[in-house]
Image (spheres, rainbow, N blue to C red):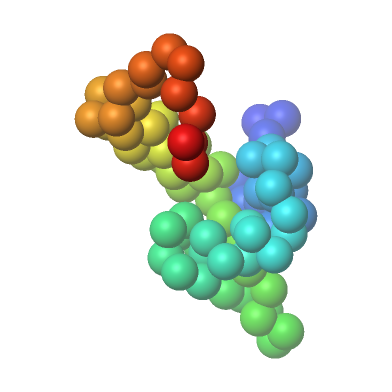
Length: 79
């Protein structure tokens, strides 16, 4: 059996991404991160492969941002 579970709870997702539980919930509710709602209490689960796909998408988006907004030495945001 795999060491990593197939489905993660939102607190697990939050820990992996180093964000708050509320931020993890918002990612799922906005549809940025695919998840499923299960059980009578409607708890969210995120498949480990979906989390990895989300992380890869964020790398791609970040690379695009860096390319489109080059850093200029000596300037800080808001200056």
